[in-house]
Length: 89
Image (tube, rainbow, N blue to C red; front, side, top):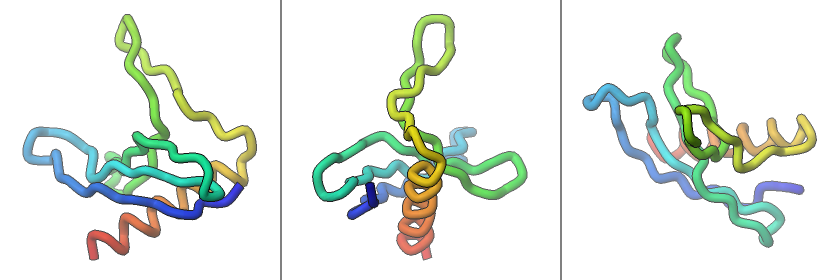
């Protein structure tokens, strides 16, 4: 599977104490749309991609999207970060 489109929705939550810089939607092979990716600032100042998840009872998070191959996971992350950087520059 290949990422065929990434839509970035930038916003800054740092003034509220948040670390989310953007939300993203990813289209795979022009046939599957996955919503809810987050671009998050790490404690060291870099950015990373958080896959869609849902907070469940007890405050824990449950992953909604789990790529079964490392290559696909990295491909999705790279494409989201590339699109994010292009959008904010």
